Length: 192
Image (cartoon, rainbow, N blue to C red):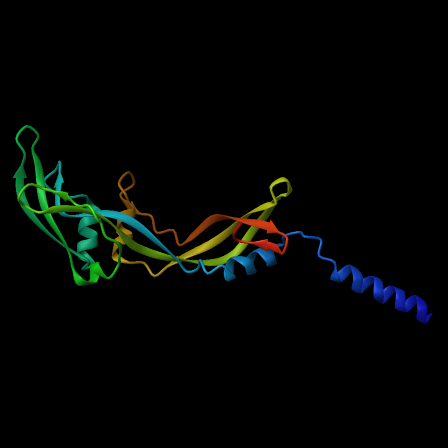
């Protein structure tokens, strides 16, 4: 009886200690959380400085960002010889500057009026919620992980996601994303 019990326990321990190399949702979640990519800031490009536009007012998202206190807009009138465009001076406020991620290093000169900048601004953070599925690709020692992230900490520049066709803001707080994980000699990793 003791030998049988010993063999059963030894077999169970052996099976438990063997890692079959499969990537489970739990392992994938742990690797994604340890990767340091969350919270992941999301950003958009926005033109500011001296901005020319075909209509006598800028797109609606500019005024929504202005209402949030991130920019100031000053109409400068019409400009152009063959093509008439309306010119606006769009300045960043201190609040707007705090969300600046990457400033345009090569702004475009706009005659004697100033420069047009196209820079990147933070719109929100995406935080990891949970793994939905894991699809292993053994031939490439890779796995595609589908996960859910939640958008939080919205900034005034979120309004750049203005949907003109529906005249609404698309504030989806839950998004589905994909990540690739790679199998190495030491196990699964987020980097090759």
